[in-house]
Amino acid sequence: MATASDTAARPGNRALPRAGLILGALLVCAAVATLVGARYGLLLLIGLGFGIVLEGFRFGFAGPWRRTIRERDPAGTVAQLVSIALVALAAFPLLATHGEELIGAHAPIGFAMVGGAFVFGACMQIVMGCGSGTLVNAGSGNPVSLVALPFFAIGSFFGASHLLWWTSLGSAPTVALSGTTGLVVTLVALVAVAAFLWWRAPAEKRTIPRRMWLAAICLAGLAIANLVVAGQPWGVIYGLGLWAAKGATALGADVSASGFWSTPGNVERLAQPILTDVTSLTNFGIIGGAFLVAAWRSSLSNGLPSLPARAWVATIVAGFLLGYSSRLAFGCNVGAFFSGISTGSLHGWAWFAAAFGGAYYGIKLRPILGLEARS
Image (tube, rainbow, N blue to C red):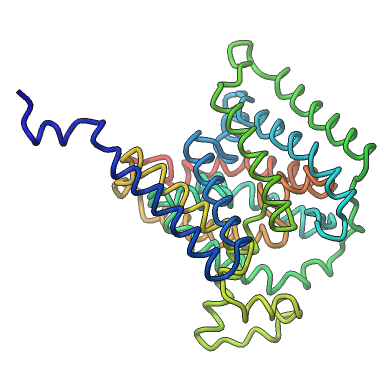
């Protein structure tokens, strides 16, 4: 006969805590909707979806790029390209018909943009997380990402503060593909890159797991929803910089001398509650969604890894550089690569090439910095 303790230990009896997690998340979204508006509550819910998909399906950007470079395993990178293509199929028509209400992730190509993307690609391999990946890993309790995240935000703040100086070094005009022709060109380019990666892969690695297909489809659906509800594509970096900017002003810092933070739009955002910033809301949601999945799986209790001191120093420096470089590059894997390409921006392709090159060197640096010595 089962005892009370035996019954409590059975997996089926975890339904109540799990139901509590879901109910708690929905109540937070409802509270945000009540306090600042239904649109903002919905954006937080979309952010939770991003976090749940990324953590739940073990889907991201840094890891798949690493496997593509080291093992010639293209599955994760190709799945990313598939997701971008799905978003493009919806985003191009939406931008064409609702250009006054929606904007794309369009930016110019310049020296700072290319250099920033290269540095970002290297640093995301050092800490094993891009913008969204660092948020996901922090939400699921990864100690390295928990250390890197605040410095990521500080770096984004300073990168934005210096952005106008860097862009003065030289930038080409912004080029954005649009219409049916632009969509066809984008899709053909995505297919070409995927085919090249597939051709380079060994025969035994030419398979995309079912979870990656599901993740690509879910991520695309959420990105399209974000575009419609937020009026802009999915992004990460601005929200992180805004957190640091608000912290700096709260401590008495004067940001009025910054050409970036002193613009009317940014002055307004600094004065408004953080829950009215669309990028911050989805960032909060990503952290929360990853936490929900990790708590659901009972995998939150990650012990502190056994790393040498130089590894923690490298994590802090790389975290800062992730924020700084991504601001110069007009986004990370999400804002520049994923959202840039899916809304027709040529800079998204330049970002992809530069960041992929940087990732190659970042992979080489990890063991040198002692970050492969985790227990």
